[in-house]
Image 1: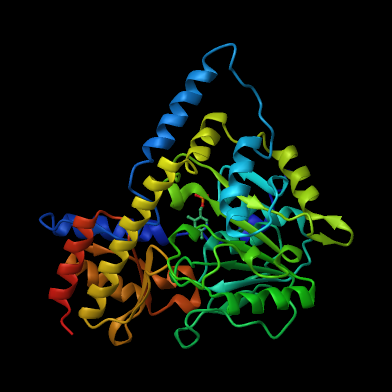
Image 2 (image 1 turned 120 degrees about the vertical axis):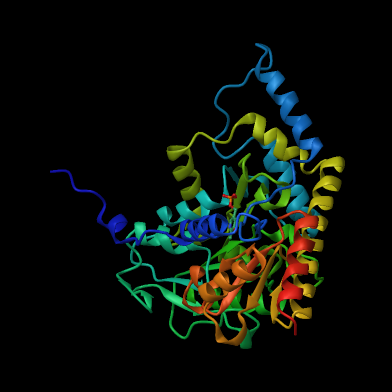
Length: 406
Ligand SMILES: *Cc1c(COP(=O)(O)O)cnc(C)c1O
């Protein structure tokens, strides 16, 4: 009889957002008069920049004419987009990344989830705790995670707790690990990492011949001077890191789908180039991203595109500021929100993340995400996102400050 991949059976079902939806539904039925304000979702709400839409319309027209029609494109992306990325996101910042080191894809979720294909199953994986669940679950699927134990997690995964006393930054592991997932600015905690701290990770990886898988999906939200926008700003990183970027949070592409992964040619392990290996993997398993979408992504770098993107980021960052300051006024401890659309707050009076979820919903009609849903060390914390409208964000914060007086 056919056998299914047993690794997939090990995965516990993911209930987080289903549980949230069920609780909100039940509350709405009981209190139909309360207007719910959703600040739990990690999805953007502002429309695509006009420059992007215009570029996609033009590209769609091209596809409708015999003279300009295009079939399969290059698997790693069209040269026009790879060049625009290399120039604008890296070379202009003084980081020497070549267009051949850029792989365009449909998302950073797919890329962070698939990158493990090019690594042996016996590598030891380290993740931050709390964490974006994709890194862990895809390693479970690959058979790299061991067995799941309630309370301690996966037996073969090295968890790096990100605690308040360390500014929610992970500590360098005591043991040797091979694959290190880092995400900065971080989802869910909203904190960024400075040059000095990130350099410690690069040095560790170089010393141990490990690789850092650096998820910079929120790079566009960085406002502080000393925060690197790319791990390749750190000396030596091109020999030990892969970087993931996305147009999703930057330019509102969550539904449009376009991202890219940077694999420097200097990344060579056992005399094998990871750039070549990933190129082989991608050209075998995918046929690239739609021409229309890549033209839209290219327009993100146009003068008008850049201006519009900036406006949206400023809009979300202003919401984050409203949330953070409002929470502080209500007597809560809140973190993040300065280089990120996420605010990470400590639950009051030792409440669990879910107890606070219920209390907040009951008292204010505001929905957030329980920190425990992102890992054991997320317990006792709560994530609020800046992706709602300014009006709703203000309304939510007014309700919170009047319900929870300091
Ligand atoms: C939203 C997000 C991404 C982006 O995923 P896409 O597939 O590009 O939409 C990547 N990493 C993290 C941590 C995210 O929160």
